[in-house]
Length: 301
Image (cartoon, one colour):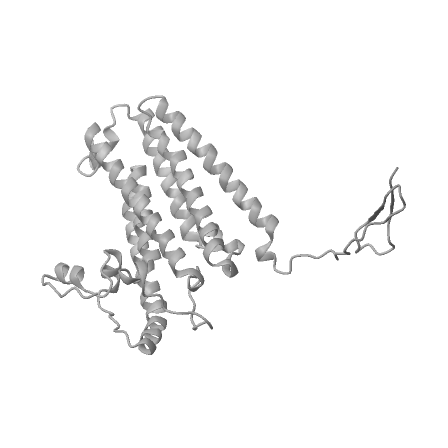
């Protein structure tokens, strides 16, 4: 028979006395709490669990709608699955390659601001309204007449449109994930106004070709989601909002810091057409901006 005896201190583990009277040696471990609530394992695991549930349920609904024949409503749960995977990967890649920054905010569920949540809500609503509500009142799809010049109307064109969207989406996600992995501890979701100790300017790998590959990837990922959804209004809205957001962010916050780092490394700094060259993939050249202005500039890498 075994009997348990406890010490008076509540901070010590119980000791078990065996039938032979021998008490095994134990290491008294004090009960500790997580000092930083932003890195709470329970909060992190709960968010990851809920994102996994959302991804699984949405993917199941997407496949179910596709199996029922021509049903454009598959796009709505597919959008939720895409968002769930994106937010999970944001934290996972951060935790894998930059553990000190693996906090709750790394999920980017609330850190992108009010406009981010509104944009995705409007995209979801446009998909529902266009594919479910409008056809009930306009069975002949006459509501699409103003957009027929822009939207694919036959089966082949729709498939090509979807392939384009998924290419943009997967390509953008892959580039952003690769950028976060290659930057490692030098990547941060928050713009750093001062040079942190140990921080270096990454110029190899994908950063050899793109100034801000994570922005590049997010921009085309965002547009790709709307191409897949078939949202014309939100596609235009996403393009305008993302263009403006990254333009202001790069010009006002990244360029001053990058300029300081480049001066120390004796690297050239290009300010003209920074957003055009960023979004179209030219790292140190102005070829895209030059073509749009009507003259060809030299591509330098």
